[in-house]
Image (cartoon, rainbow over all chains, first blue to last red; front, side):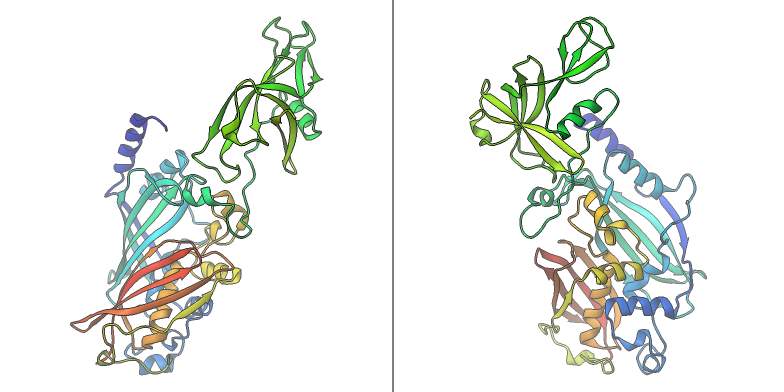
Length: 321
Length: 138
């Protein structure tokens, strides 16, 4: 979605959701002591009005109340929520933003107002409306869209108990400033490099790399070398091929130094070279062992192999010593 | 604080500070509170999936941030606290191994309603900032 027109069209589609009703959701259970107990134990909250009937009776509340901040929990849809059926505005909106890669989610704001305290036996329902969807924003976590909903809470009998404004950020993982600084500080686990898309045409090349061998595909019809791997020789049309070991020596044909956007599985600045091997084929690989500002076109380089993780080894090139 | 006696409206003055509350952010706490709030999003319990989604580890869910805001206020004001509203904004994630330090003070008092402004900070910055409106017996 680099293109501004496509971005504008996508935003227009998102904006169509503003004001749409998501519908009502009934709590799975009445407000009950067991769920309150799980909550206050987990939170370490010792306020006795949540669990002690005697203390609650002596308080201004007169009876046990649920923690008011627990309001949203009574209507949470659980570990495997049943489908809300086709045409549900919230499900459709989520599917739409996720289709453009905004698959990660974080809640950013919550504002609750309470009309009254909620008691044991109250059965809550909520009623949700999509309030707004923001334009694309660059945030610390990543590039994404804020989605704001307004939720009314009431009893099944229709008595209002409170309301909530809730805002989430749907974002693309690895596109934020926090991702860029990953690697600072204590043991930041870094995600693995993206996997190559392996198939029967290119598997041999990555298998050889795992053995720290740089190979070049060769047509057995006309002996022409080719890279990247492909099924058919573009010189003679033959589908027959084998592979030969490369010397590992070459020159920098071209290169780029990538500063932004930063993805946590790579180190930056990231020097990516187009290397011309002395056998004549070219391949894309990282240039290492040199300050990226000192790389020049034509510079002689030599292969080395980087074991990124147990399943991925890739060639990289350093200046010839 | 007391779990049996509450502050009265007249006991409270603008500028009063709430007792600091330190929450050690154990992995167990983050998972247990997410489940107690029926929030099964994988980023709150599965470190591998949390990393795939661009987070360095699992992190506390927003319902729990609300839960601690509620606890922080009633730890100070007592069981007669009547909440009117809780408004929070989240910043730095609460990751396992860190500590959230909650501080706050009374920022307004008028027409029987008390406003508390608070923050919960961890080593990365402010996890939560917000305001709570509440009533107390006179």
